[in-house]
Length: 169
Image 1 (spheres, rainbow, N blue to C red):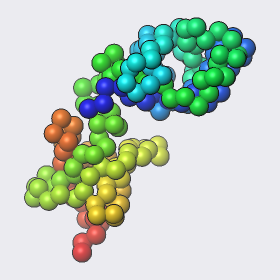
Image 2: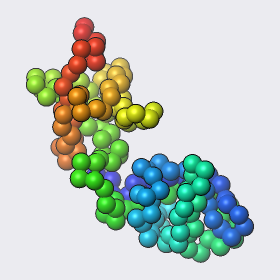
Image 3: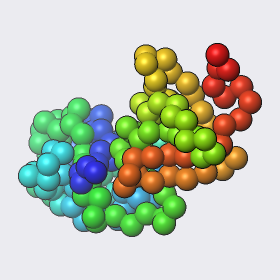
């Protein structure tokens, strides 16, 4: 499992004192507020202290230590910020998308393998797993009627197949 996870992308500066606009790739501002330190790399070698985080117009405004001018902030535009998963608290039944990608999807009753999770999409009502098998993609809603068990440690998601979910060929 990846230890350092993407939380968002710095897309612009905000004001002249070094604040940054961050497009969130995590669950939301409350998740982001858990962190005293974020990272400018996915290996945890470039930590940067978080001074403040607030929400404004569908984006986060973040203030990082030592970024105190617009010139310094400009240098971070386009960068991805990462968190250390060990510093976060998530709900017991929640999973990181990074842990779901690559999981095998199998039938809970027959153990038939349907493919692997290639991506996790969300258009509002629920997550949608993009399952890839031999170049073919199938989208399945991640709802309790279908997804019965997720075990990211063993990289297996067990589902209850519903009529029309996969082609019957």
